[in-house]
Length: 110
Image (cartoon, rainbow, N blue to C red; front, side):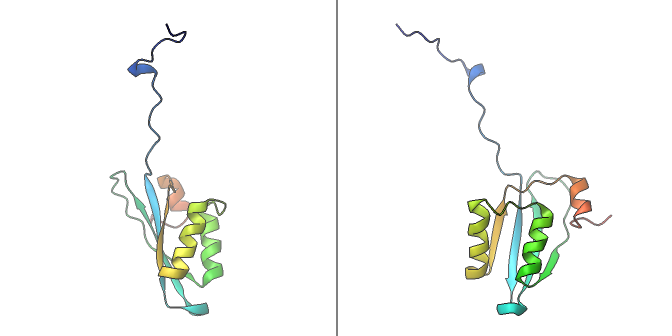
């Protein structure tokens, strides 16, 4: 006989939350003159449509990502940055911003 009681459905761990938003980055051009267009996509069915942000060059892209709160230590983010250089576009998952934060960061028009 087991010393631990069987787990019921009420005591099970909830599944991890799914990504509710992602940041799409597309590169136009190559080299130091490349332009990057960033769009924020929410998956929760909200009617707020983000406006695209523009970064003219690699350093302005990194600065903009830092302002948006992207964690550069994440392997997913580093992989996405490599994909942008190699393939021209990538998604950064799990970037959740409130409507207020989207306004502050320039992703929504007032």
